[in-house]
Amino acid sequence: MRRLTRSISVKAPSAFALAYLTSYFTERGAQTTGAELPLRFPLPGGLVDGLTIEKRVKLHLSYRGGLGEPLRIVWRPIGAGPLPGFDGTLSTEFVGETTSRLTIAGTYTPPGGIAGVAFDQLIGVHIAGATLMALLGQFADAIQTEYLVRVVP
Image (cartoon, rainbow, N blue to C red):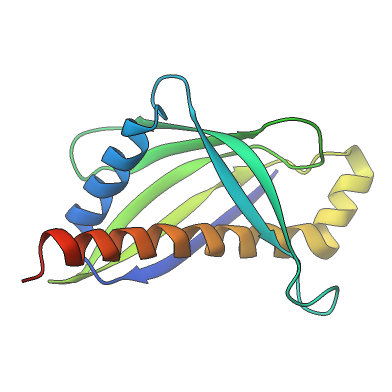
């Protein structure tokens, strides 16, 4: 099992960021049936620069506690392929009045037995980390856009 944590700065308050993500995924059924989400897997530089693979996953969110608590985030791949599932949390942290840090932290088990573990040690962990950063970037862009539309005069 591999543990990963990635974070990104967001130009919106932490409470706004988490509330936006909660409503965004709730509207898409992430708490009940699961929301389909395309994950983009950028291949590490040196292999094939700029190549990105896309895979659809079924995303589920659930609450661990009250308002402001991390969201439990789980995704499972849809269809065949060597993509692992992921179990973790999505949280925000106060940085400043209009800035927060968005973090995904969790675990996955590389598929494919011993060969999969070897692949993960060499390349897979880099792909997984880049994927989390790309996903956080998508989330941050959506949060910041919504914050500008709804709150900033």
